[in-house]
Length: 572
Ligand code: ISL
Image (tube, rainbow, N blue to C red; front, side, top):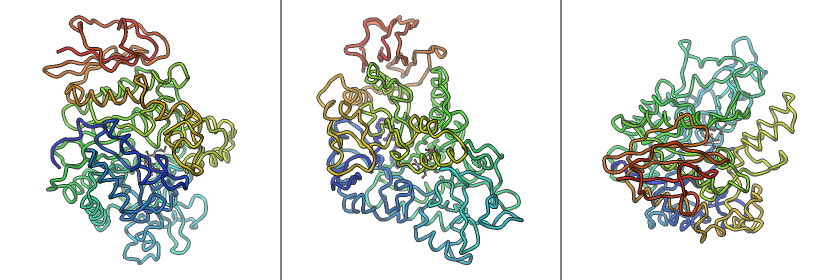
């Protein structure tokens, strides 16, 4: 790997199923992305992270992979991928693939072989276990541990033919690979090298902090605390203590680094998706000296509004959110590096969750959230549609939802006696499908996304919130993102400056500085829908350049900010 080139870049996430459909089947594809690469170039991003396009039964929209070295026909061909890489490279943009190796599809040849018999050569490539002692396989409660799967129900599936259970932290079509087995690791490394040799520029590693499981002294995976599942299933438990940042995680990441990336000239980016990771573990994973990964996605700030599980919403006060990001800024100030994100294909839309998506404040709050995020220290990620200020989708019926997690939760919660109307309210707020509606290229009924019938409903706001409408509009959210990304290129303090939080207890205002020996930046952002008073000593800050203002030419008076107004001041 050559240098930390990704520090001054912005990454754009493409969720291919929902980005652009070139062949009219209603599902986005690689040729569709190819038709829109100039949108990415105009934005100024340096990297595209492409969610999975590999061969897949699509049980979890491609996060269930049946062949790592083939493209799913729904998305196109390997030649289409090569063409996309070439088109991006021509524009100075690198392509990072999604690497989903905590689990495969149950239709992957490795699993088919593993399942074929208890004596298969590949039996040990996955987690197989007999029924709990004294129980008969397949009966409720006979599972080897009481773990709940992320998509509701037990994390174990009974295989009648071979008489054992297999582990699946996600859907039953996503069996977990056994990373304890060195053959598994070598096979994954070989596959990764194959992609790098083909010309891709790195990997976003799906739930990579779950690959090392804690086996108890008795040789078994341990139970979780009953009732801790955070779902409507009281007999199940959260098993994550046994699989989040497990005992061999750093060893596995370091080995991967040495086997796959060491000695390559080609600059790559590696980002580990790490739900539940702590600051301390993130420092270990991203300290360049340790040669593991370049950065991780941590989840603290996107879990703060969860009560008992993600479907149980809890109001989030601004000081709590600010403190969380500040802690990560400080924790990774000297070693390691932050990834900065508000949303992605698993999270509700940023403007609906952290901003105000009503007509009066949607544009300003989308801009201000972007300014706050991009001015923190780390590499910012833009999720498709975020650059337009897209909001959550107002689906009203369970039939509108496509996501396996949302549908599984609805089934489990209703079966446990919750009122379906209440479950729909929770889905409306938190479902992953909020982020998965088609990218609105224009205001037409199918949003310029497809000429066919979209696989999931278009967000009706696309009539006004779309690329065509914002393209030439200097006051648009899109124009604001372009300015922010340009500022990163022009002002080194955005990339390197040391972070210090100001006014930590202010309920409305997010203020901080970024300091280098030559320049200091001051970010002042009203993160509320009411006017805000800001008491800051601004001596030395005038005259100043008002950078990336959310409102026109900037505030008349930084002591009184309009709702969702933000500005960056600079002194040298
Ligand atoms: O969205 C979540 C459930 O509430 C998260 O816990 C999510 O499952 C977690 O972030 C892991 O996500 C990744 O792996 C999953 C896949 O469904 C997600 O789309 C992916 O980003 C399994 O591969």
